[in-house]
Length: 395
Image 1 (cartoon, rainbow, N blue to C red):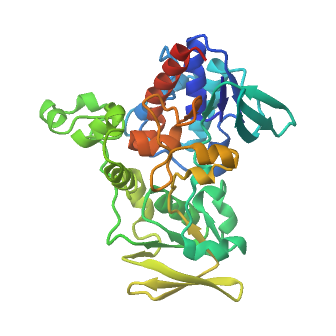
Image 2: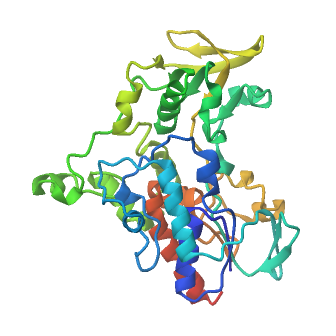
């Protein structure tokens, strides 16, 4: 068994497979995407309770990491810095999956003997089953209007930058109204850049701060009306976090709509004061064209402001799962994957794809199992399902 990827989903899956005595090889740089694609100074939108990577014995939670480091317990009103979460992921890896091989998979083919994997080290080997836990990078979505600017270095996706300080002194148009857009704009402003947020929505939305550090401390009537969950309070979020298996049985159109709309676009409660009044926000605007103009960018907008000039455009426009963008899978393997009309893979209840022995987890599974797969808390459901299926299937 081979796990491709050593972020939270890959590490969790490997830990659960090992607990079931499944021989597993894990490939990737631990927490690489978090280190190279999340900006310095970022905080997790999820609470500490919802930021634990799952291991079979539940002894390597975020709170266990803090205790091991001699730090105090923290609750729902604590925003987790990305740097601390990366350290936690590395701590989890060292204790649960120390055998991670720091090599990148560059190609996966499918044949009679199983999956043929080629590494950047030159090694080629065959595996009977593969779990793809490759994170977000393959699915970053940039609006087509910005395509020509990307090639010219005048536009990029928010996940392309671990250090936004390099934009100090520049005018940056930030496209989007979700957490990534608002936090990127705040970090740009704090680094000395001049951000302008361009948002389709008529007003910015922020979450409400928790009343207590533990959901169980809320008054019983409030807990009954809006039960707590890893995704937040409310019966709908409770269902998404507790019953992802049921989400799979919704019609394609319902699943796609809910994945797009649940929990967004919105900023975390602690972000409000870092955004309000700090920099211009153009709500009710969309980009309909973009062009180079003397080494800068001229955006033409639909909205009260018709033209916006900037030195760079940062597309914080989220991710779209599309099998065709999984370049490490050879064309024949991609063609063999059943998918939705929007290109997302169709997965069985075990996370196995239509290609026997190929499992996809993390964001790649969001269209099957719902919004919980966008968050670290989804590792528990995914790792248990995959490891049980692999172990009982004799792989």
